[in-house]
Length: 116
Image (cartoon, rainbow, N blue to C red; front, side):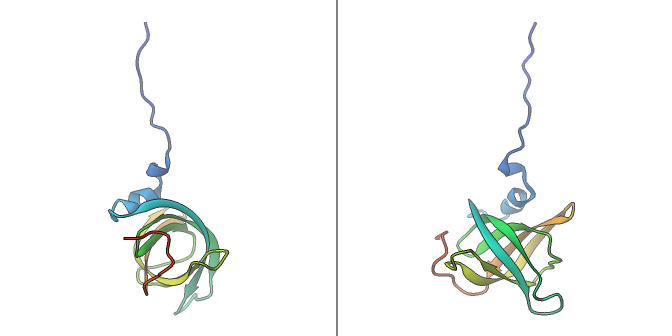
C-alpha cells in the first residue's frame, strides 16, 4: 500500500531575504551581483560582494555579513557601473551570522532595473 506524502523543497521563497521581501509588496526577484560599501560614521569603508535578491523602484534587498544597523548608509555598485547609488538601511532580519537587509535609495535612481 502506498501513501502520499509531500516534502517541502528549499526554494528561493524560503530564504531570509524572501521572508523580508514579504514586507515590500512591490518586491520583484532579481539576481544582481554588487559591491556593498558601508559609508558614514564608524566602520565606514567596510565592504563585501553580495547579490541583490529582490528589488522595488526604491529599495534593494540582499544578504550581508557587514555590521549594519538601522539607518546606516551603504553604497551599492554593480560591476559595469550602471548601478552606483547610496541607500539607507530600513529593515534588518538577523539569521545565523548573515543579515537580510532592505535598503532604500537616498535619491531617485533613473537607471534602476525595477520600475514603478
